[in-house]
Image (cartoon, rainbow, N blue to C red; front, side, top):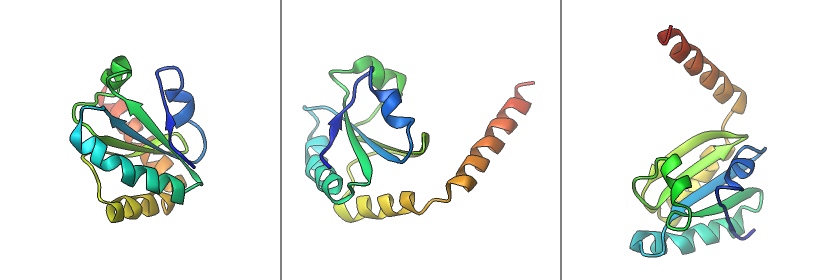
Length: 127
């Protein structure tokens, strides 16, 4: 599967669905972004069971700001609507493959429980 471009209009629907969604926040002027692009594209071809999206931070500055993107490239990975990974910096092919494998291996029931517990603790602190 090739990569898809996401915008303010398509971001939420793209990342909140079932399955794995990788989002590469990039800009055309960014050297590390251009260096990472072939690695990301190759992974998208290898992992047809995941969605590989690209967010042009220059064209969609308000979305990049809402996501608090401060360094690019930034890679975010969502699984079943939950962000399970976010970090800035270009990854080499082996590291990206390892990361995708780890996300595929997650026990999502456990992840949902951890999210619920963290939210409950945050809510308790706010009272």
